[in-house]
Image (cartoon, rainbow, N blue to C red):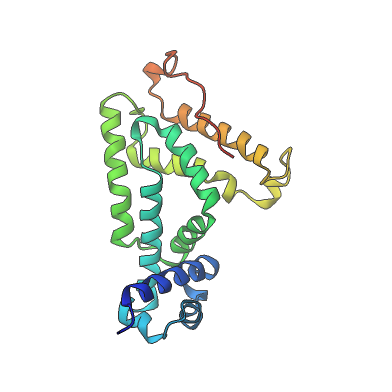
Length: 208
């Protein structure tokens, strides 16, 4: 019976995910990926093309996994930000991959562009329904939301060291999560409803 190509591809993608997250595109080694996947190096080129193509695929797959695990809710952007914060805490490789991608692949691959397009459309629709402020463009809304959500992970270690508790302590993360979702709510709430009792609801349930 011939070897299962699907199983081999899955092993290669898993190995590539960890290799690229740790070393980036330039630092990753095809030999290490093949060894970790217990596969012939030649199969990487057969199944995925060159190393750049494999990197782009790994980043796109990680964003697709994130999108499936954390559905985008334009009508509840603070809730989405909180869920995204939790996911990225559990999957820190995703932030590392996207960070490497910004540094080493400045021209965004089409797959990554398409990952953002429906979110921009959903924010625009929510703005038309007066659920999200129209004072900020949809792309800016999403960029600011993502910046706030990843602010603690991307903050300088020196800054995090000045927090009132160890930076990755569950209680410290709970406090930051609450502050972050409140900031997203303040940013995205339409001015006409910012004082409405229904809008000024307490933060989403906290999950360290």
